Length: 299
Ligand SMILES: Cc1cc2nc3c(=O)[nH]c(=O)nc-3n(C[C@H](O)[C@H](O)[C@H](O)COP(=O)(O)OP(=O)(O)OC[C@H]3O[C@@H](n4cnc5c(N)ncnc54)[C@H](O)[C@@H]3O)c2cc1C
Image (cartoon, rainbow, N blue to C red; front, side, top):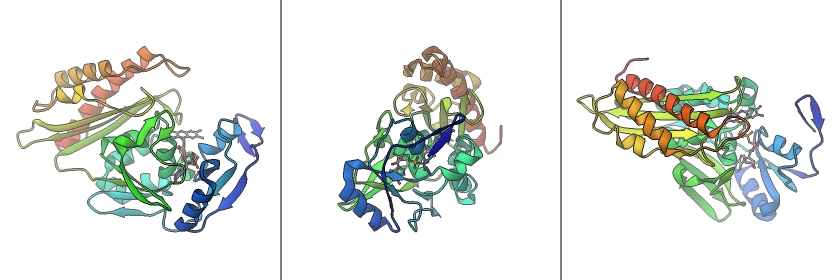
């Protein structure tokens, strides 16, 4: 039974399975295939089932699987699929090596959602308005998937294939996210606008800016959420900044180009034109903050 909006909804019938090890989960996925879904934090899957938008015949609960909830540091960060948003957000390893992830996770739902929802679930669910898919793409992260057939490492840029769709096969388990760390002289920023605190964003912008020894822009990345069926990586907005000195005028020009690169649809949460306007405003803001941080100061 799921509760929401003051109503109690009975879930459609399903058979519950609990896996103790990754091997268990892979075996179950291989046997049950298309009829099964992994249950992680349940924060997206259970509401979808309550509204009959998903009707899996089998749920494979991975919450007891050992070793999937680890955060490991190296030059970057490896987040096990079962790491909760809140754990990643408050991890010193994440903050030190991938501060963009820390900043973005603070925007995910409410504290209660972040306590339960997992990073693997967020990536597998692939909501185009979600923070983590955009940030993983901006950081050049990778998704590690396992099945009884073997292991695959998929670049975030190739992983999100459409609205709530990914490159994961029905028998694959997402086991970890590999996220490269920040480089020297690199700044970052994540900004979003949502209708109410804790709601999914209408639009979000993840930015990275790296400066060279002369203070010019050596590289930059911009990824937008909430403007298409997947996160969208800007091309022209970045090209205009390369080799230039940071300035308010440059952010304005990049923001203009970014807004022209997207073609957001209108929906209940905002018109296409409003979303385009948000892309512009949030891009300017994110670039300004990222460039400040690249110079070693906080905005
Ligand atoms: C009120 C509310 C507000 C929210 N706001 C936000 C928000 O602002 N930003 C945001 O990003 N999210 C938001 N969420 C969603 C939340 O972050 C979810 O937790 C997350 O999207 C999915 O994670 P989960 O662990 O709950 O996954 P589940 O709900 O358990 O699963 C989601 C999907 O991913 C699949 N899956 C899960 N783990 C794996 C795995 N390891 N391998 C393969 N498939 C897997 C499941 O089969 C299912 O299809 C919100 C949710 C609610 C209820």
